[in-house]
Length: 448
Image (cartoon, helix red, strand yellow):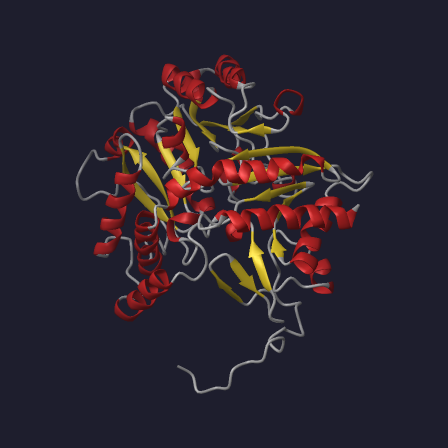
């Protein structure tokens, strides 16, 4: 331990915030009223001036077991003292193999092989490359087209923003990948307002994939990628039967189905993966975030045996997939993930999330009479709340709501335009669920 005197609360606030170019943040506005956090424990962040801030977002959908869990911290510290780094090209460390085995055991069906990376964005780009290469390996090299979905978020790589459908994430970056098309999104306020769980309306929207097959021909389509629950766009649960229809259509035409489970994986919907909850096994499954409880970067792609085996051909000394990252299966990320999986199992957090789902749903749906609320959607431990936009200033009310919650009511929420997303750590108590709802109502009342 350091012999330096403890830093007094409030004295650690930086006096120059210009050097850090913050991601997905209005940087100039941030400097006017910084939202700084310098500590965390369990369900709460702490600020440099000593305030405890209730984390209603699990960081960025990722701290599923709560903050600064001692066992995860100890695992990272122990790993750093023994093996700080091992190159993943041509070499490996044993814990990466045991982690891959644990993840394969958690995943449904024959999702038996793991390709590690460092983030959800990298996982998506990996899955897209694997899908295209898979068809080439099988002699169907014309299958290069990728199908995404409107309002989808698949990270920030060029592959991810190409198949993604959030326009603001890509409009500044010129042409995207060629040969990409999009399915319609699944949300209709007219038919799904105040949905709790899977809405009854909308399964037929999967049939639009047949239209794209007719337009492009199946022989040109490599894969369809969807989020089982669209998260970053504002929590859009899948219509009942929608994912099952997508699976059947993909099977009919020899198209790979990719699930982006970066948000939904590791308990967010009350199961290890949304694929398990919905009874649909994709061909490739992207994960990140909760796999390490966000204590160290780690992500990856789970592949079905048939996909993996298509690459395991030819001379044994030849690299089967020319792809990877310097920090794939980084020892610290792997150590954090082992410890996180232990916690999820020991504390039954996936089952806990499922049990608390109706509690969160009731608390949030009770806000439907609060000022500015236009719609609410809940599923698992996630909720999206649409607020009425300010005339000629779309997104401003949502932004002001986020600021109000942090500065005045000691709560962190996630904003996407005029939609507020809630996704608390799975360790949340019923009392804290109530606190989220009451503080949310108070913030809306202050804005009214």
